[in-house]
Length: 228
Length: 228
DNA sequence: GCATGTGAATGGATTCACAGCT
DNA sequence: AGCTGTGAATCCATTCACATGC
Image (tube, rainbow over all chains, first blue to last red; front, top):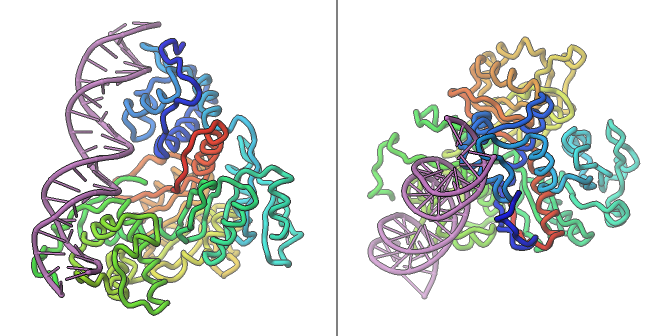
């Protein structure tokens, strides 16, 4: 299939965050198409479903080798399986959530975080009143002092920070020390990075302010439609 | 101060989302600096606090006119007030949250969503069991059928979608019809856009998958550090 | 004929580097 | 001397357009 692409496993080019984000989107779409019984899809049809350009989709997919058939398109199930493997969710990764407040609790029970490659193993909190309880779906709240132990014991690979802004840096550093190397941060702070730990931040406040900025300009008659 | 910049209010150039996101970050930093009693800051010092380039900060700030003093830097309080006005959060905007599940409830009580320019007026849900209740901090859950009315009555400008993926498009369309023109979407779907409604999406699943992708490649020895 | 895969062209955003002000 | 404001240069991502293969 990829006769011309006999690349060794390590010479793959660097893939940008923007591209991987789109791969997730494609995967979701392919899962849907498969459930509808569709067998193949062209980059052009895929592009129509989002606001994307078909060339971009082909480029994104071509990063990993040649997967389409000229004149036909892509095999839905095959491409889906391939993306699952490329994204590394063909096995389950354990997750802990640090901070068992409203947000942490909600995230623990969030469907997208349980199943299909991820599993929330525990919540962690310093508050002794919260320790020993559990989320609605039964995920236990453990003491902060147990964090290191849980990470090792349960082989936790990803942590979610859902504590207040002032505690986030300490938590991040402790997670790094405990051996976690991927963190999703919800605290509204600029964290000082450790080289071993990949960080993604979701800043709710920034998103709201960005909408406010748009509204303000719309009032003033400045046009700026579009998404994300 | 801006003698050379006598632009009329409407000739302002288009400002990218990337820039506005950074403006929010600067604002947060300036608020902190002000609370520490610092009077002025240079673009260089500001840049050191994030992982940014000082030229970028100057460019970002220069969008709105000349605010710094050569040889000195920027006046902290003055620049802060200016950003607050530029971001349109010098007045309070009302917000509703559609979907009073775990996530919606958590967001309703989220500190960043209440105060400093925003105010959550209500939660909305179809489930009759939820209607009439309230979040921990007292934000009421209203019926879905009331949405249109609440939006008009309370002059709601921003809506947050915290419903399941399959309901999100209907909610979005209803919000548009009700007159909301800014939406923050948490449902994992690609929404079909309306021209009058600005959309920002926060897709938690995509963020996790992106971390998984990083972990998978780190296993294979591909280097890709960095944030966001 | 039709759709992929991809080099070349375009379009944006970031960074450099320096003129100009305090 | 020090720092802003900004054209020019660079870097990265997206889009075009077409050769290639089913």
